Structure formats: structure tokens, C-alpha cells
Length: 110
Length: 122
Image (tube, rainbow over all chains, first blue to last red; front, side, top):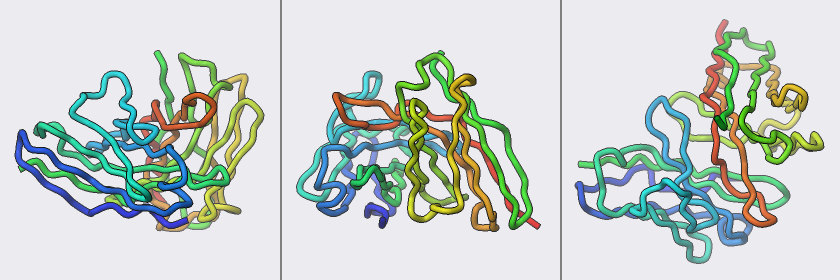
């Protein structure tokens, strides 16, 4: 099972919006509505930001949103804040009870 | 308080095995699935597999198949990950994570352990 493809890095200025893509195949991202997104700050455990492609857990800012088109899922962060600077990972069901992470994207807030 | 608490850091020599524990509290252990995730220094998250505490069912990533074993002790609300034939490339932080259901489908991870650093060095 190959890792899902994410850009290595993205950046944006405070207040701007950024989008992180996560590309897979019809056997994982495109085959199920089971993509989740995780934020990880250095030295910390990941935290779920989006699940089931586009649902936001209670307590997560509405500046975070998820979407999907065909085999590519996307995480959009609007109104960028300094605290959003972190690593972001997508995660998808890949069939046969297996799962797969993306390679991760480092978000820099300029 | 809903949490997963993992065992402490370990140091092993190449070829040895390590067993990491993940103790659950604040929720019904058998109602969820526990996944294990590896993160080597400076690297991305890597899915290792899962165990269903309710019936002990497991699923391993092909990458770790044959080298990793997940077990659980329901009386202690604890899950365990044992990795054998350790090599230097296994130096990493290992996380356990609780997966929740939305409707009838297993979805995302809402609770993570604090991570356990395993160092493999001669």
C-alpha cells in the first residue's frame, strides 16, 4: 500500500487561506468517504481536524474544512493564524480493513 | 477522563524485541478499535495495523506483517504492540490511537496515546 501523495510544504500569511491536497486512487481516497486529516505540532501527538472527508469534530475551529473530488481530498484552512503552523497528514481507508497515511505537509505561516 | 496512556521509552539492541503497552481509561475499551502508528524521527506517520479489543481480531500492514503482534488484556483495558527483529530503522515514536465509528463505519482517531520512543542501537 503506497502512501497518499501530499505536497511537502505549503505556506501562507496570517489571514490568508491555504489548501493542502491529498491524492490517492479509486481504491482508497476515491473509493470511500473515509478521509480524515490530522494536525501535528512538534513533539506532540496528532489531533483530528476533519473526518469522513468533510466533517469537523466538535471543538475544532470552523476555519478548517475538508472536501474531496474523485481521488483527491483537500484540507482548507481559512484565516490563517500563527498557531496553525504544524504538520498535516491525511489518512484514508484503503479496503480490506487496511488504512494508509499521506506523506505529510508542513504548513508555514509567514 | 478519556485517555490512552502508553508505557515509557525503551532502548533495545538490533535483533531484539520490544513490547509497548497502551492503557485505556474513561471509556468502554471493547467498543472501539485500537490502531498503532509509527513515526521515525523527522518522518511521516506510518500505519501499522489495528486490534479490536472486543474479539481480539487484528489486521497488520503488509510492511510489518510477520514482525509485529498486537494483543490485548480486556481485564486491564490495555492493548500491546510487540515488534521483533528490531533494526536501527525501527527507531521511532510509536503511538496507539482510538478509532471511533460514525454510523456503521469505522472512521477516524479521536484519542491518541502520548507516544513511546523506541531506540534501537548497538
